[in-house]
Image (cartoon, rainbow over all chains, first blue to last red; front, top):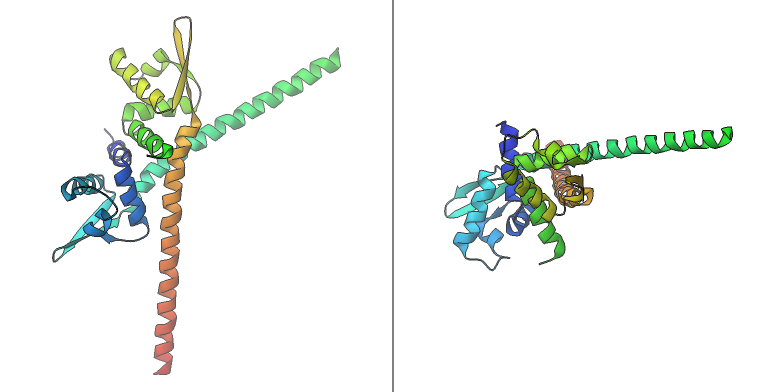
Length: 118
Length: 118
């Protein structure tokens, strides 16, 4: 399976959970420690750590440990891969709408032409 | 949980599978029947039908049955919800980079100023 396919699987899977999306939303504005990230959630730390693991395995965050504090940082390229796939679908969809528009206008012109010939 | 959260969960989950993404890529360019959609995949029809069910439950496709043929159509608004969430993260990330850029330039100006004062 192509590398990008596996990456898209992991990134979309990681984003399918509200806790993990909240972590991404937090890290987009700046790096944060495990406890800072966990603070808004009424969740046991081991469960929360599993969410961070999913994000790290999906290549969406990296972490560094200094003393007892682990700090997380967003990896924006992973979000970019998902963003790129969705942008491509939007581009194709808009092209389809444009083609439909051209088709409708052609139909409209030929139907006006038919009426004029009557 | 807010409605959009549930919708994002379902849409991102639906997109985390390569077969389902391929179906979306196919439907973006036009509607198609179950057999047309299944044709590129070496997969038993019941397994393939489950993927279509996931997409339909996520509100990403709709289907209509005429005689024995079921035809699928993309619902672009569902992709738009995912696209919108990612666009917001990109916007916040770019704003962060801009702020960092301003900070670096401020630092650069004050450091040049310091050197001039020496």
